[in-house]
Image (cartoon, rainbow, N blue to C red; front, side, top):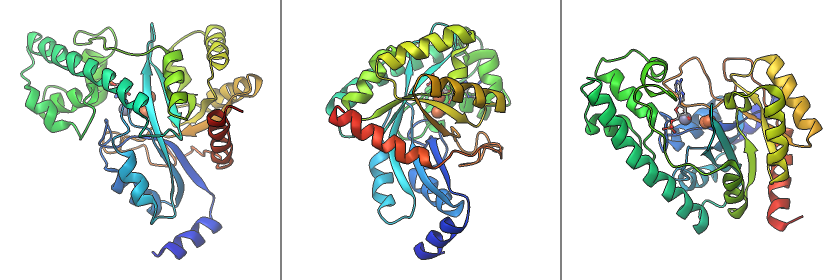
Length: 299
Ligand code: AMP
Ligand code: ZN
Ligand code: FE
Ligand code: FE
């Protein structure tokens, strides 16, 4: 298919965008080049690369995007301190060369390295035969995280799936879980702003808070500069989407969305469409770009 053919296809079909995608630079299984080519084949018009704690894949993807009809959004997903569940903050249209950003995420990566050794020790103590080289072999290019431990445990035949590994060993509070250095949500938002980006609260349901508290937390984050809420998300049920959309409208936050595509480890989840029924409205991208631009110019 030529670039012109693709433009024509894009013109004829429903416009699909995906603003939450992982690559081998964190815990995804595809390279930026493979993601871009998959997006082209699936008629996806815009893709945000949001790897955990790294912008390592962004330059490669931006360069490839120059010859593609797919628009690429430079992004990141930062993990914030969270008492019970998981809180992730997405940064969009960030300057991936920003020194402040690079310095701060380096600190997170050092924290990950310390934590990874501790996880390995715990797993060995629990009787699982596993070497650091197994984990490295399962990992991609940049950030090594718990999913890579899960994959290494799977390869050794200790468990059957990433999910099982998290359920019995690696999930918060389980036997091989180890805390790691994280910024607070407000620090994550400030960091994203320092890099000229727009901060969005990812998959709000994973924070695991009662609705009234969660909404209060989001309201507080909005006062600290949060710009959007990830309303459209592959794992959100329709009632979740409706609820978060209502909250976002009430709190004047932009509704964003994406699949949280990781690749081969979740074969039922597809780039752009999630489990088949996700549709992220493409006008979001225009509003996101305007908002990121405003936050840089201080408007
Ligand atoms: P880490 O950043 O090393 O703490 O690992 C967290 C990442 O592991 C998340 O961002 C997800 O990609 C993945 N993850 C978390 N919980 C699960 C689970 N139950 N099953 C599979 N993957 C998970
Ligand atoms: Zn991940
Ligand atoms: Fe996440
Ligand atoms: Fe993610």
